[in-house]
Image (tube, rainbow, N blue to C red):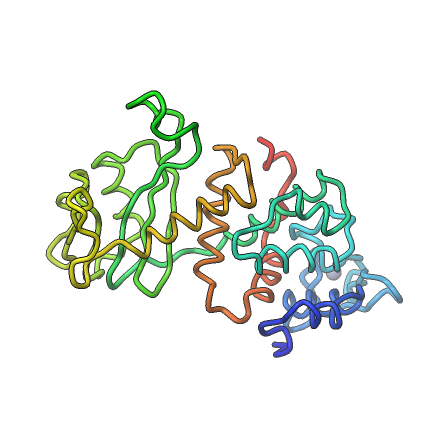
Length: 300
Ligand SMILES: [Zn+2]
């Protein structure tokens, strides 16, 4: 695999990929390490149609390009635009809005929106492993109107996000309707492995009984201003909440509840790849492996 795509900075990206041939070559290599494979007859081996993206199958002479069957299939955008968009999305710590992409790539808002949703979808296809070790679990409220105004009801137009963070490891985030016992226990069961050594939460009663014989449940009592007790705390997941809220305020402004799950997936992906020097290349590889995503699926 090309070593030079490791931890690529913007000048290097421009130097290496600002021509279509270089982009095409990397995508073909990521997609077909053993040589181009015909999508019609599955023969491995094709001849380049001179000066174009198109390949001609050596067996059945079907003509195809590296875009076929991927999220790039219906796109007329240059590969370089996809490279830049992907780069911006994986490198921006707090995410990139469609408006920002529109301005920076010089495309229409609709194109930018389409591009960002396709890249985001490709960023989130991975099959997550169960969390292990010490796992912090917490919930937060996102969106809605002014906090605290109108007394007890401010939470009604907010959305609950539940998160689990393995210390030093991955994060999982999910939109839920409630933070009751059933929801929280169900979430933990779905993302935390049986062999996790401990689950740390705050004192919220719905977490009670969330441990078992393999997994200790420990809680800190925020109500009594207890934030850390020895190793027991939820400060990792709380930092993730402040990052999430800054992202929403800073990049997305008005985030519709409909798209929140996708944004959470994007944020988790970026967080979980924070130490991955091959993130850009890996994201391109996923773009090359995912099915074509229809516009209508996104707007449904
Ligand atoms: Zn063929």
